[in-house]
Image (cartoon, rainbow, N blue to C red; front, side, top):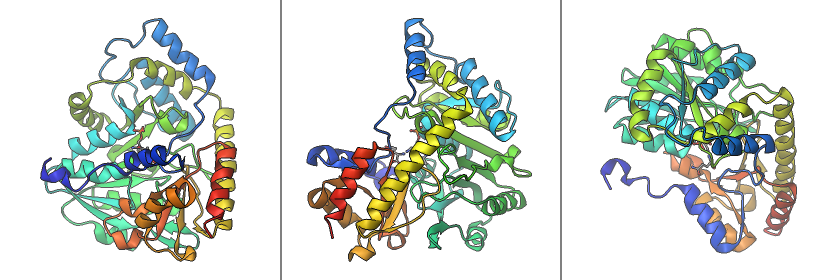
Length: 384
Ligand code: PMP
Ligand code: GLN
């Protein structure tokens, strides 16, 4: 293994899901729903397979139906217009979009300013590109993790090539406010930076909040690569259909890297996701309400079990602080949790460079059936 990747080892998600299987624990670690997405979307995939659509290599940029549907979705929800032919690229999940964007846009030695804690593939892809990550730590403040705009400004240097943003934010559940996003946008314009924004949880915002894409801010559309995925929005994480929307030059760049990673993927599923993107507004409202109820269920269970619970305004994760339980090391806590309580969770420290800053935080996924969450909460209550 080369030096660029040596520090990363096995992804925490594989490690913790294997631990859950081995110990028969309830897996609230890796974020995937235990209920598959809509029947009609599954039927659309079956039809595509049966009718021979996508069983051979689909076009490099993605099937036209899906590119059109992605563009229509951005227009309908956010008033953002993208040309499906030149400004939309289908990828093998958001994971490939992130990798291709970073590999395409970074020169060795470039600095990438990213919000810490960050989704684990960011650090690995920045490293594979030979670039350097500069984390800006989100800190708890009034029950949520907040971005310090002065710290963000201070992190940008002459070597900064791009800002890597994620909202709604995994693992903290923070949704950046309009003010925070406006400040990010202003900084990007002022310093002439590219922005890669991971918005895979765009439809998972709670309590009536709205997701505001960074690309909608003044001066941003032309410098922003927006990434999303069908995995989260339609509960098909195994299909690995993601996409990029960006201006033509940026899409062309990302595609240059993408063509040598997978070239193409998920042929028949692309047709099914095109149909999913056209689901009526009621689908999204129901999905959000269902996840919000699950969030509330798990949050109250965790509180009763003695955790400090941070507000999850979006995503399907809750971040907790374990110090009220008399614990301080999230790694040790998560390693012992299957044995102690039959539950698996993720130590947030894996998403930090400043390991100390992340040590007491532990992430739980709530995209599970109510009875599973109730059982997990009951087990965790017996911890105290
Ligand atoms: N970004 C974030 C923030 C995520 O949480 C995930 C999935 N866990 C991904 C990207 C990857 O998405 P996909 O499964 O579509 O590759
Ligand atoms: N995005 C999911 C999470 O954060 C897991 C994705 C993965 O397993 N790589 O839990």
